[in-house]
Length: 156
Ligand code: 4NP
Figure 1 (cartoon, protein in one colour):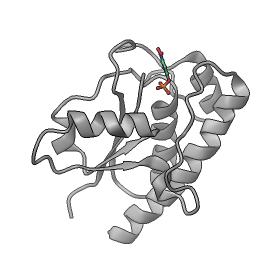
Figure 2 (cartoon, helix red, strand yellow):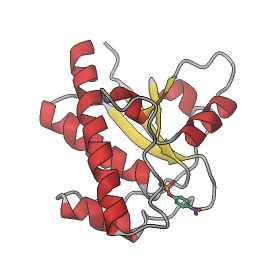
Figure 3 (cartoon, protein in one colour):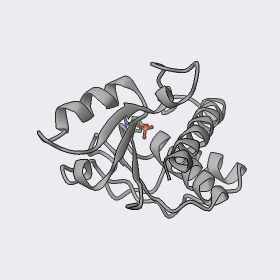
Figure 4 (cartoon, helix red, strand yellow):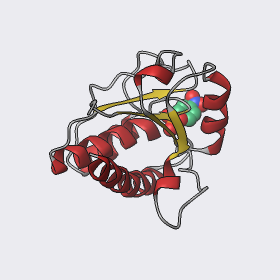
């Protein structure tokens, strides 16, 4: 079977989606799965930048180094390269649907739709928050990462 490819998408690609990427990479590695994992933003403001330092600090508190991640914007080829594109909130999902080229193969969904009991819920933007909001993002993305990795393992 082709190696699964999963893309996490938020607005800036400096707070939520890098944390989702890091959490999912950890779950994939823990299960010995092989997957292509990346993240991107719908917006262009932070292209080429490292993650927000509060996101880097949050990942570091959980033993993961994301300081070398580089923000990028979603591009049309992503809708062919990735099997699954997970939006962190509903606005991200609406933007992805608008950007998705006709006939593209990627499955688009809201990240927390993969967590039982959390369907339809967003991962709130922590940009104007503090470490408490970033920790809450971490809790949500790790829960989603576990369920997504279980789905991948079951589909093998
Ligand atoms: P993210 O957070 O979408 O989780 O990366 C944000 C980052 C930057 C901005 C908003 C949200 N911004 O307005 O620049």
